[in-house]
Length: 278
Ligand code: MG
Ligand code: MG
Image (cartoon, rainbow, N blue to C red; front, top):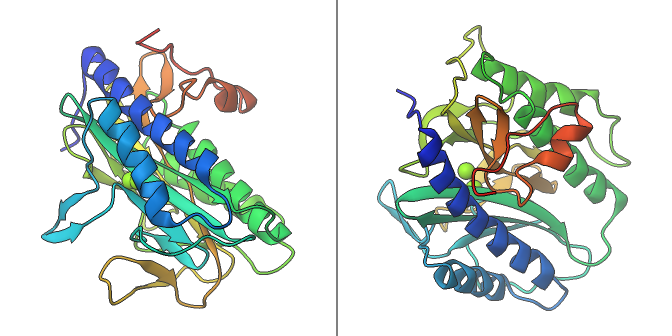
């Protein structure tokens, strides 16, 4: 069962999404050599609290406690890195994933940020991952099927020239998800096409977190002994980008982008839905 939201509920999710956007903006601006991932966590925590929201990350997930309001995944870490005393160094590549609950509605988004100057292949990796996210978001249109989102993400990645070093590994076993009154809901959103199923029809009121994860090598990962941190099996670096996106009668609305996705979707010839909060 996919939870279908009314336009009023999507407006509430937009408000939650903007809190996440603010938190990630503050984190992005704070990323620098010498900064710890705990400091980034605390910056996001303050933004969430200042907006009267709460964290959906700092909670039990399937019985397992996550202590942070962000996931901070550095270099070969793909997702679910626990913020802590790790000090960022020049050239690192960090993915910051953040969520918030406002008025009972959840938001979830992630960005990848270079720490100072990073190697060209890392810049390319982040650009390809972000581009694939937008290709998937552009398919969040009434009448499409879930598989159209997955196919667009995979297709975008497969069409890119290979990076100066490595290749594109689309992380297997992780993907996007429905979101609304909980952070993780049906359906699971694959970042590639698998099998023959087309998935549910995207009808107005469907809200999905679209979140490709790509490495410079393998699609295969391992969870570290901390029970959270997901790392690539071959040690290659990874990128992760995410937005929470609503399908509306007037097109996709990117709830966790300040402009609702207008600018990036326009580049793809797609008109974003008007912002319900103006
Ligand atoms: Mg997330
Ligand atoms: Mg997510």
